[in-house]
Image (tube, rainbow, N blue to C red; front, side):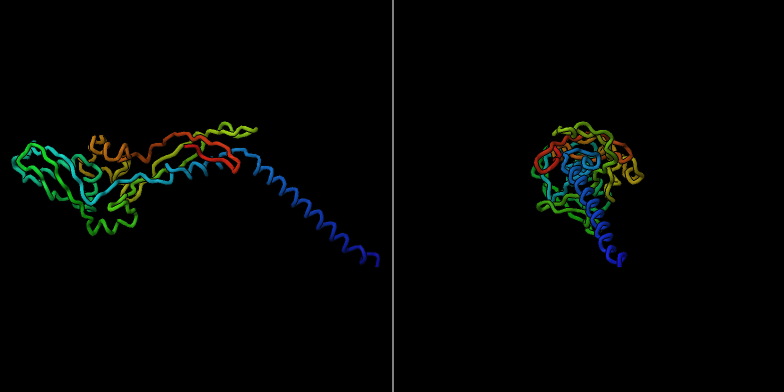
Length: 247
């Protein structure tokens, strides 16, 4: 009777100890979570949530282009006007020339406003081929055209972290990253064999971005090297609801 009467109290005592341990662990967790301390793991999460890592490097494909082109030069006397104008157009748009070479998009000159002049506004129409439609699952609609992803940033490592503790409401992280190409993007990746398979003139134009490409894409990526490690930094600020990546 003596033993039987005390067994429940022993179990209750053990349960109380477990609850106390759980409560202590919870308090420790809450204290750590609410301390506002920046960590490399949290910095990585915030960097990956930023626009630079969420938005891929892409090629813009429009259904129609209007551009002023020079219609004289080597080959202009022996080639039809439309053929020579298309050659000039693709020379000034290396990314589109690559898509054309890969058989994804066809381009055709549909109008030369002043065919007898040395230069003229030219209208070029783009048509996605059957091969292009098969590959377009990765593409995104952009108005009446397409945005074709060629690479995404891959975060490799947060290599350094300053601030973000002891009441400091700002922090800064140094990190490394590299490009990760899409299937089409492999042809724009200078470190890959696919890129080497492109004609030399296209590779040369991709490496030295034309002024037309710079103006059209406002400095967008046209070629890249996925084997090259890049370095960058990110700044953070602590608000009442947690850390945020500063733009």
